[in-house]
Structure formats: C-alpha cells, structure tokens
Length: 241
Image 1 (cartoon, rainbow, N blue to C red):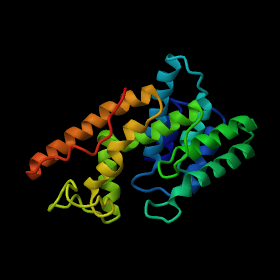
Image 2: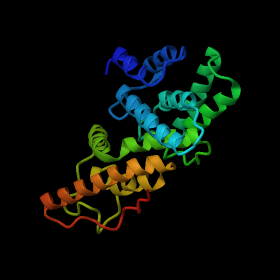
Image 3: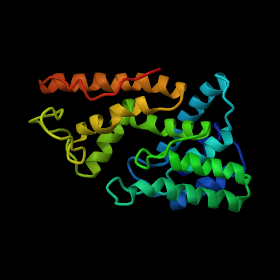
Image 4: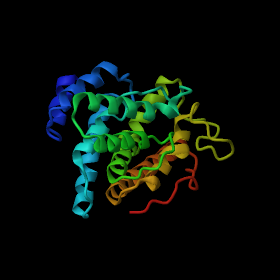
C-alpha cells in the first residue's frame, strides 16, 4: 500500500494536524513486513472505529483521538516473531509514541499516558491487562486482525516467510504430539488463533470476533475433510457474545 493511499484512507477516519507527521514517522521508522504493514495499520484503525462506535452506542465514553493515535503507532517498533525481545516491542512502541506526541504538543500529558497504556497493553505476548476503554478497543482491534479470513491469510503468509510448513501430514491437528506452530502453520490455530476471541474485552469486539471465530472453525473442518482426517474438537475456548 502506498503512503499517499494510506493517508487518504485514514483521513476518512481521523482528521487532526498530528496525523501527517505520525504517518511520516511510521514510514520512516516502522519495519514493514508481511504481517505488519500500512494495510495492517489501516485495518486495525477501521476495526477500532467499528468497535468504538459500538461501545459509544452502549453508553461508553470513548476518546476516539486517543484510540486513533494508539492504533496508528501500536506497531511502530515491530520485532520479528522469533526475536528474543519480541515481548518488549509494545513497550518500545509506547515509548516512541509518547515521545513523538510530546514533541508535537498534540496531546496533554494525561492523554499521552492513555495512548502509552493502550499501545503497551495491546500485545498478546506482553501479557499486560488493558484497563481503559481506549486500551481495550485498541487491543480488540489488533486481535481481530489475527482471526477470520484475513487472520488465516496472514498466518500462512507470515509462517511461510519464516520457513513454516502448512501442517504435519502424519498428525495434522496435533492429536498425538505437542503443538509446534514454528514448524506447522495449522498448529497456530490451536496455540493462539482459536483462543483470541474469548479474550477480547469489549462486547462489540466479541460480537465481531465470534463470527470470525466460526469462520475459522469452518475452514478447519473443510481442511480436515480435504486431508481425510477428523478435525480436532477440543482446543478452542468458548466464545461469548
């Protein structure tokens, strides 16, 4: 996705003086890869807008500018999935975002702290609980990228780049071995993807995630049928709406 196309698309979602220098920072500093690029940021921002609208309709007081700022810079420091410091990437992104917005004078300190927390808490691997509604929205928006049709497309693309295979044909759904999502992409459905929807924070996010979760179950059932083995039934966490 070209930077100008990205700017045009996000202008439909947020129009603030700080947006252009923020996009310039992303273009200069973010290490683009198959899983995290301008398209990913745009989809997360759109997810966040959809969730924010749903939560506002439920009576939540949501600061959309804080949500948008955090969503745009949540991956500005993006370490590879196999990097030893991967779990600290969200902390590094939050620090860079805070410094960026302070330098611009775009937000007061209280809002910068909320942006910092929303970015730091979004990461699955960081294990930080989202406390504010803005952080919960950003977290849900990012996690929704990892489920459903696009989540399936992304996991096979990223796994292929890292040298992973599709599945272990001797035991495609890890019924009689430990899960190994470094070697086998299908294992990642069971180690992470099918668990994400049950861990979403907002009712709006869970409603969206539930539909995408069911799509993944349908995909796995079709895959099992084509391979000629039963699908694994016991690994997914229950989805609440």
